[in-house]
Image (cartoon, rainbow, N blue to C red; front, top):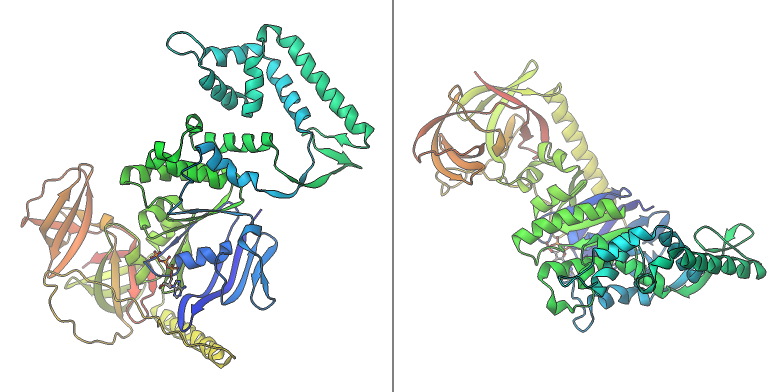
Length: 538
Ligand code: ATP
C-alpha cells in the first residue's frame, strides 16, 4: 500500500538545518537505507516520517494519507501512522517472557476491525487438519524425546508450525484421540454449520474467512484482538525470526542475537506496512550482524513491508538496500540503487563515502580533443574516453546555468517571510589525495574549467606486466581470498584490491593497468561527476 512521499521537508533548530529541503519518494515494498556521516540528518529524517519529530516545514504522505503538512496544519501522531519501529536500544521488558514481550503491544490494540466468529474459524481449521490424521500423527511421532515419550512442548510447537495453528488449537488437537479422527472432524464441521445458522438467524452471513457480512459487506466493529488472533500473530512472527522454542524464556536467558530477534518479532507482530529501523544491529558483534543482515533481507521479502533503515555503515547500506539515500549536512546527495551509487556517484562526496577500501582520487588537467579528453595523469599523457558522448563546453555551460538557477531559488527563499539563513553552510567536499608525503602544505588554488579529479575504485587497479604505469609496492595485506595493496606511483599512493593470494614484497617494482570504463571524471570546480569512461596512456 504505502508509497511514502517527502516534499520540501526541512527541520531546523534555530539557524541549524538538520534536514534541508528534502524531496524523496519511497516506493511500496522498497528497502531504503538512509546513509551518511554522523550528524548528517538520517535519524531526524526517519523520525519525521514516523511522526516522532515535527518538521519545520514541508509535507509527508504515506499511502494516500497526508500525515504532515505544515501549511495545512496537519500532523497525525506516530501511533496513528500504522508504522513499526526498531531502534538500536530495543529494550525488551525484562520481567516479561518472550511471548509476553511480543504479544504485549497487541493486547492494547483497540480499533475498528472486521467482526469475526473465531470459534467457527477454529473449528473449520481443525476439521481441515483432521481430514488428514496421518499427517498429524507423524508430526506428533516426530516429537518424541530420547526415551520414546512424546515431548508435549515440542509437539505443540511442531503442530503450531506445521499447520499454522494457535497454541489453543494445537492443545485441542494434541488432546484428541486421532484414531477417532473422522468422528472428531464431523463434530467440528457440525459446530461450523451451527455457527453459520446462528449468524443467519441474526440477519448476518459468515464468509469463507468467517467474517460476519450483511448485504454483501463485511461488518466492522470496535474491538480488541481476540486471544486466537494474538496467538496466531505471535506464532507467525516467531516462525519468521526463528524463536519459536524460546517463548517461555525471559530476555536475560537469551543471547544478544536472540534478543534482537525478539525485538524484531515484537515490531512485526502488528503487521506494520512500513518498518522504520535505526541502526538496529549496531549492538551486535560482527558475525551476528552479518547473520542478522541476511535475516532482514529475507524478512523484507517475506513480510512484503516497506523498510526504511538508518545506518552509517556503508557496507550495511550497500548490501541491504534496494535504494540508498545518501545525505550530507542535511542535504540529499544521491538517491539510487546501491550499484549506481557505487559506479556513478553524483559527486566527490558520494564517491568517497561509498566503497571500502575508499576510492582513489588523482588530480588531472586537460581539454577536449574530438570524442576524448586529453589529460595529464600521474605525470603521463593520457586520453579519457567517456562511455557516452560528451561535450565539455556544453557540460560546463549547463553546470553554470544550474548553479545560477539554484542561486535564484535560494534568493527567492531569502525574500520569503520567516527565512532563516543556514548556519551550517554547504561546502564543496574536500577530497583527499593519498600521498607519500602527507605533511606537504597544500597551496591555495581556485580550480578552473579543465581541472579534473579522477576517481578510480581499488578493484579497477591490476598488477599487469603489460601495464603502462610504474609502481612500487608500499604495503600489502593478503586476507586469503584477496589482497589489499598500497602502491606508490610517483608521489601518490594508490589502493588496489587484487583477487587471489599474492605475496608481494614491500619495495618491489610492479607494472599497473587500469583497464575499465568505470573510471570517473569529476569537475574540480563543482565536485560533480562529468562522466565515467576509460583511460588510455599514450
Ligand atoms: P548519527 O549517525 O550520529 O546518529 P544522524 O545522521 O542520525 O547522526 P541526526 O540525529 O539526524 O543525525 O542529527 C542531525 C543533526 O541535527 C545533528 O547535527 C544533531 O546535532 C542535530 N540535532 C538533532 N536533534 C537536535 C535538537 N533537538 N536540537 C538541536 N540540534 C539537534
